[in-house]
Figure 1 (cartoon, rainbow, N blue to C red):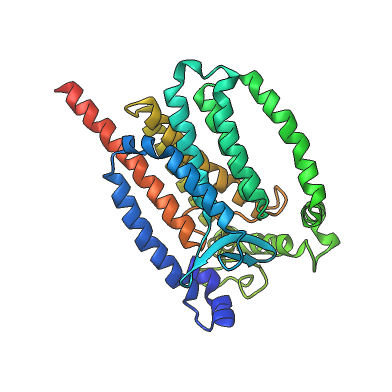
Figure 2: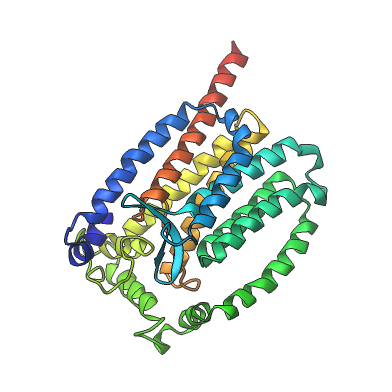
Length: 347
């Protein structure tokens, strides 16, 4: 799908129709290496890395603002460039947050209902959100915020504390929209994309054309019209639109069912995990995947205002692919250890 969605734009912009395909293959190979490594890497050792992961994530998120290191695209500094490759630190920060919360709440199980116990995860999540929103990257900030709240919930936080957190957060959203004019423009385009069909509403309109053109079974693989420079970011943030156009409602439903099955299996691994840390770690990874899938599909279908967020495992982007595949390796290690514990208990 990455090749189908990108071969024309890649040929036009990079003089190579396989530009994105080659990068994605590299991501698959490195991601598979990460998956295999973490499948056989004892997840318990990750407990010692919670502060290391936090510090590395903060340093990387700060580096994107440094001239000569950070890469600016479309007015945002979200990438670090080195030796011809680009890297998006926010992809690592999401799972660093999950690791920190899993470590914290597994250690303070009996104190989870106290407000002081949730302060460290709130501070870590708040620092990540602040650095990411400054890039600016509203979509990843939303993802981080949702994942943080999910980890607080699964960690055992009292429901009344969510009210204390939620009210200021909801008040902050309109402020963030107002202070950045492009966010307000995107909101207006979401409410009525036809008011600016050649401006902020253009991407959503083209996405809706793509969805409508697909029908029940699609126009056929490689036969999309919108990928011919009509739909921006067809190979990344809006690849689900191309899937819908080429594979139709049937193909899109299959993709959603695959994601639903994956999340179900991760929740099942979490419930059968050997200890609380492993359970929180796996359910946190599942939350990241579910959140990104839901937000991505909601954006391309016009259910929420447009914002850039890749579809896990599918959108073009080597960093995202490597990180997500590696986290699946962590989940597999938890699954293997839970099976070994059952065998030992039986014997």
